[in-house]
Length: 376
Image (tube, rainbow, N blue to C red; front, side, top):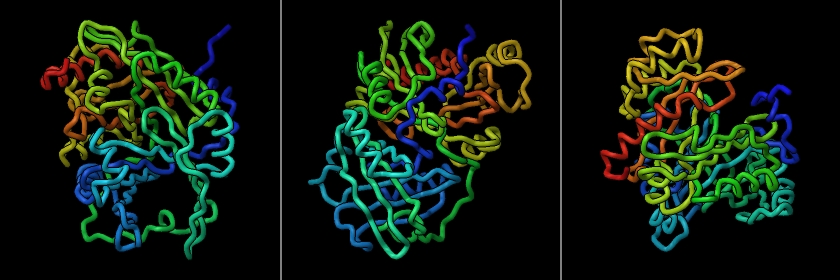
């Protein structure tokens, strides 16, 4: 019997929890004002909304940035004795909340808690003159949280409690469109339980699996399973370390993040060459390009592509294919001083997979960075 494509596998999800996409991603950071300036300058995000003492919020300051359908919330504590401060002290700057846009936040909470989710935020309704936002939340791996956001009766910029954030400094965007997927790193022997949690609690389906025989280099290895909801709007690959001669990138992450958490955020573009050129000009650092042999072999491995090879090679952009098409991708270096969170820029030309053919080239490049840090 012919194996199902990734798109066909998505349709087998239980999908009792309709999700329309990623609503926003919230980072806990040491200095949200400065982090917001970085994401505006380097990645081309635009000022959207703000919450803090001026809006009646006494314990934190939050800056909301937007580009395309991507919303980032950057939050800093205003005092040391807070859960936000504790999170930053342990993990450094990182992702706390992966918020999902749903039709019914109250029902999403009820259904997931009934299936075994640990509650984070009981359902609540926030109101202002623009309408209401209903929200609730549960814990996933580590201290990471899924918020369920229902905003069908809201016409404001972001949500109640925030005001418009106007700025005289508004760099142009870089062509980023939406969140393609978010990858989580979990500890030893934790990938399968986390996968089962997404199946049982969220109704997701495992659309792809990679073991340490597929994802390995001379020195290290890891395993990964990709979880997706039914429409494919939300995908969460889950990585765990595997035995190797030296320390894998997952082990390095777990050591420096001091726990499980979001490893990288993949953001989509329709023109990866232009987007990457702009990002590089603005100071975003990417992993080193693979050797020339990678590009010499590319036509045999991937087949005909629309893009010119020269700019891809010059920028170090990776290409892979599956039975539904091909994709182009490139990974930044970590965007924090701790070697934890990074970003992926991805352009899909039909492919629904995650670049399995690039794993070796990618992880060898990551290992070169690990070696510079003395962490290989």
